[in-house]
Image 1 (tube, helix red, strand yellow):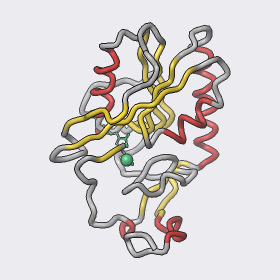
Image 2 (cartoon, rainbow, N blue to C red):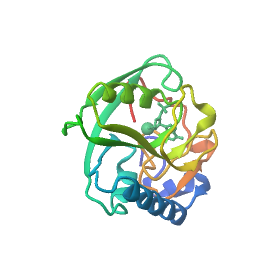
Image 3 (cartoon, rainbow, N blue to C red):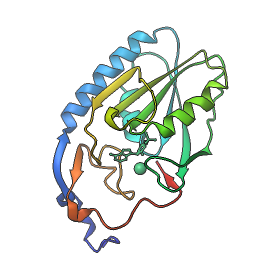
Image 4 (cartoon, helix red, strand yellow):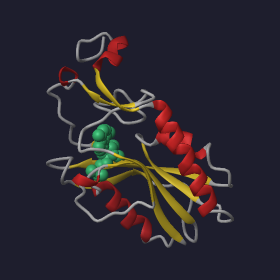
Length: 198
Ligand code: IMP
Ligand code: MG
């Protein structure tokens, strides 16, 4: 049983609607990988992702890239009065690879308000990368609080909370191979706590 009182093997029943299928996601990632391989040919870019949501996208994306790359991850925590629209971003894990003089492609699962990404990009810019661009699988432009234009976008999403393909609700559903909307009754009273890790 999980802490909502449901047997854990019924978590597929929590999905009200599949928004993007596994096949659609994989086909789009193959296109992104081909584009990145062409654009960064001869540059050996460094792909940097934010744990934990991006781990599945990163794993699939790098396997569609046909040029030499390096991969690194950072961890952040957002905390404050409302994790959606305000709050403070703090690194919980910094990069292991030095980005000075490197062509850095920052890989995100989803850009919502853009708060986390703005903080991260500002920090990375102070470390003198040769270039710094963003690849996001999902983009929710309607909720954007800051002006951010990713160089690569997988899918535009409506302003709805989604789960699956790395994205969680209360740390669950990351392992669904598609992206979907949760049923109302799967969403508990529990709000994202202070100190929420993405
Ligand atoms: P932002 O700073 O508002 O752009 O927040 C981005 C982060 O919020 C993502 O990396 C996710 O961890 C989380 N997030 C935003 N929208 C969703 C969603 O629909 N489902 C699950 N997580 C989300
Ligand atoms: Mg999350």
